[in-house]
Length: 169
Image (cartoon, rainbow, N blue to C red; front, side):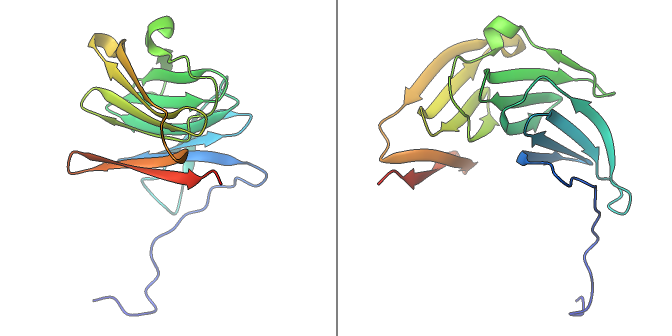
């Protein structure tokens, strides 16, 4: 039972002047989407010595990211969904550009990946769902625009999807 004065471990990585638009963590890494820069990967194994592992540019409007099993699902306001493979050294390669990009003009606010489906919340487009097949190629697209507001966040629990909707009124 910790005392009230016990401090949680913490680390600081200098990000002054950076506009962090999205964040995801897995194991000992943090994946940050930074406006006008792209994807930055940090090693957070030792919170007293947080270090940058990689910076991947070319995604100036990265608004959402989720990472699963060496695949980064990146929502870019300019390019829709990009599906990228990261190897053990964080070298990046696109998985079939034409087939792995969803043509969604506008920002993807949040996303989750479950059982070969990518669930994306978009203010302009509502809830979008992509079914992925072999090698992460898009096999089907589903769209739910009829919402009473702007889809801004989502999560999944117990095989249910929860979508946070901002009131447009």
